[in-house]
Length: 157
Image (cartoon, rainbow, N blue to C red; front, side, top):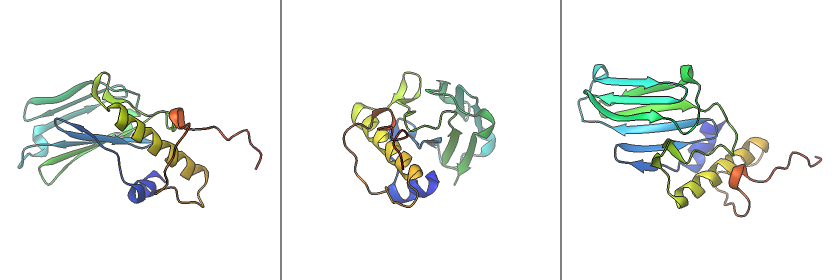
């Protein structure tokens, strides 16, 4: 479901010295630029539920405690065109209110404006899931969207 929403509405990347990271309600995506010609044997990527480490050609790119928890055995990484590593992590908490403020605890933080844009995006993604007959991919949102937006679950349909 989120893939189609992301295709129509785009992503909100948080730029880093090595590339960028972005998120949906369910997943965190990391893109790392590496020297052209890098082989898979030169990449060491350890994905845990709370920890992550990436080394390329013996050099540490990043290592630390993730902002939130992930499903360790569902995380994957790929090397594309020998110059880009893509890492996909599956969040354990898949609610719109679970908007990561940073990739790692205290590192690669989204600034206040970017964090606001990420939270708006996750709230619209939640609305899309709750109302599959509507298209929220180009919608704008204002008001109470922090923490995943307003809770309409108590309203009668």
